[in-house]
Image (cartoon, rainbow, N blue to C red; front, side, top):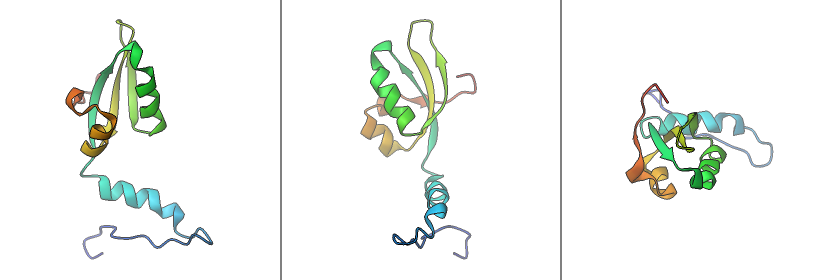
Length: 96
């Protein structure tokens, strides 16, 4: 649009035209909603760790001496709620 924001992407399910633009458009539209946060995971939370990787939200990870992980993830508040981690996240630091 006139502000340089992506408001829509035209796609063709038949030819695939526009599909390559979709991830960028989604990322641009969510940019203000995404936050980098850290989450400590216990060794028993390997399934949640796997879900975070499958969702493509893990930025970096640090193995903890206690046997778990500290993961830095980029997620929206809605995704935090959906994953059941919203109360456990803290703002990310550059050390994790």
